[in-house]
Length: 407
Image 1 (cartoon, helix red, strand yellow):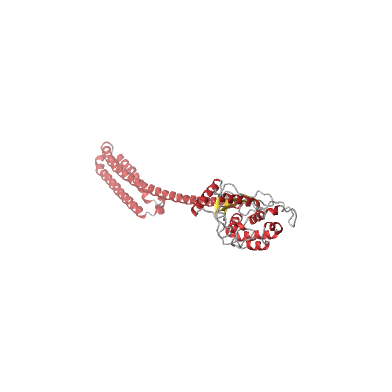
Image 2: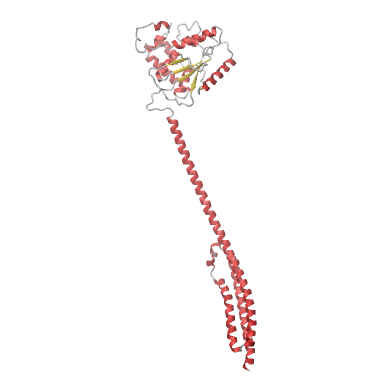
C-alpha cells in the first residue's frame, strides 16, 4: 500500500525529493471520500463511470498501480442527461470565476491533451507532452518508482502508449517538468487537488477539470496568456507577442487610413481645381457674350442718337441759314456734321479689332465672331452712307442759298 511508503526513512531514494509528500496521498484521500459518499447514498459530484478505454479486467489488473483508471466498482447510476446538466452547472461556476472549460478529445489521452492545450496552445501535441513526461519519470526513477506497485519499466512503457490514461504520478511529473502548479477541479469552484513543482514560481497554474470520473478537460483564463510558460524560453513574456502584433496592426491601420485620407484629399483637390477651371471658363464665356451684347446695344443706341442729332442739326442749321449769312454758316454746319459723325466712326472701330483681343481664339467662336463682324461692317457702311447723304444734302442747300446771300 502507499501508506507503507510514508514510513520509509532510508533507502536509495533518500534525498530532498523523498521528503516531499506523495503525489497520490492528497488526491487519493479526497477521491476516496467522494466514493464513500456515493456508496452511502449521498450525491457526489466526482462519482462517475470509469475510463471508457478498454483495460484489463478486475482479475487482470492486479498489481497495476493505476487501478482507478480501470476499476469499474465505482460506476455512477447517473444518466447521460444528468451528466450533461452537471457539466453545464460546472461550466457556469467556472464562468463566474472568469474561466472557460475547453473540451478535450476522449481518446485516453485527455490528460495530456489538456496540458498540451495550456502549454503549447494545441491539444494535438499531447504526444509531445506524454513523451516528455515519461522521459522525466524514467530519468527520476529513484523518486517515482516508490509510488509504483508494478514493475517500473513496465509501467513506463505502458504509459507511453497513446491511448493510456494519465494518472496522478504523471500530473506530479508534469508539474515539476514545466515548473507550473496543477490544479484539478471536480464539479466545484475550488480545486480538489493541487500539484506543486520543485521550485516556487509565479507562473500561471495549469487548471484541469476531472469530469464524469473518467475524463479531463482544460480550464483556461481567456484574459491571461499562458501558452509557452514553462518551456524554458529565455526572456519570454506571455502576451508580449499579442501586444506587439496589436501595436503593429494599429500602426498599419493608421498608415493605411492616412494614405487613404491623403488620396481622397488629392482627388478632392483635383476635382476642385477642375471645377474652378470649368467655372472660370464659363464665366469668361458669359462675360464675353455679355460684352458682345452690350456692344451691340451700344451701337444701336449710338445709331439712334446719331439720327436724332442729325435731324436736330439740320433744323438748327436751317434756322441759322435764315438768320446768319450763308458764308459763315456753311463751314460751321459741315464741321458740326463731321463732329457728330465721329462717334459713329469710333463705334465702328471695334469691328476692325483683331479677335485675339477678345479671347475668341481660346473658345473658337468663329461663327459668333463672323456674325458680329458682318453686322458691325454693315452698320459701318450704313453710317457712311448716311453721312455722305447728309453731307450731300448740306452742300445742295448751300448751293441754293448762295445767290440769295449775294444779293
